[in-house]
Amino acid sequence: MPKVTITTDNKTIEVPVGYAMIDMCEDHDTSILFGCRDGACGACMVRVLEGADKLSPMQDDERDFLETMAAEANERLACQCKVLGDVKIEVSE
Ligand code: FES
Image 1 (tube, rainbow, N blue to C red):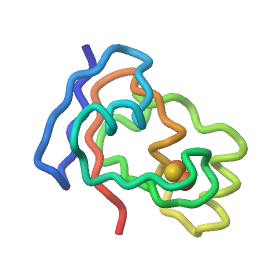
Image 2 (cartoon, rainbow, N blue to C red; image 1 turned 60 degrees about the vertical axis):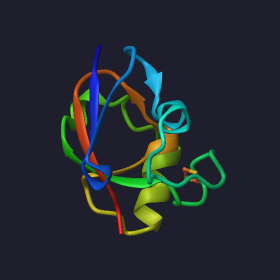
Image 3 (cartoon, helix red, strand yellow; image 1 turned 135 degrees about the vertical axis):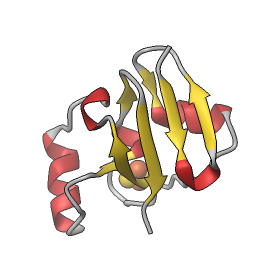
C-alpha cells in the first residue's frame, strides 16, 4: 500500500491505491486543514516534497486555482488528490 509521509506532523500513513487524501486526513489526525472540500478555497494546500507523480494528475480547475493563488510548482490541493504511490508532503504556509 502507498505510504503518505506528512513531514509537518512527523507521521506516515498507509492507504489503499486511489484513496482520497481528504479521506485519509479525516481517518487520521493530520494538520492539513479543509474548507470548501471542492478546490475553491486553498485551505488544504500542501507542498509535495517527493512523489509528485504518485498523486492523481492535476485537473484544469485545480491548475487554474493554483495559478490564481500564485502557488509554487510543487503545491497541490489535498482535497483534489488521490494517492497512487508513496509521497512526502508538508503543509504549505
Ligand atoms: S478544501 Fe478548499 S481547496 Fe481544498
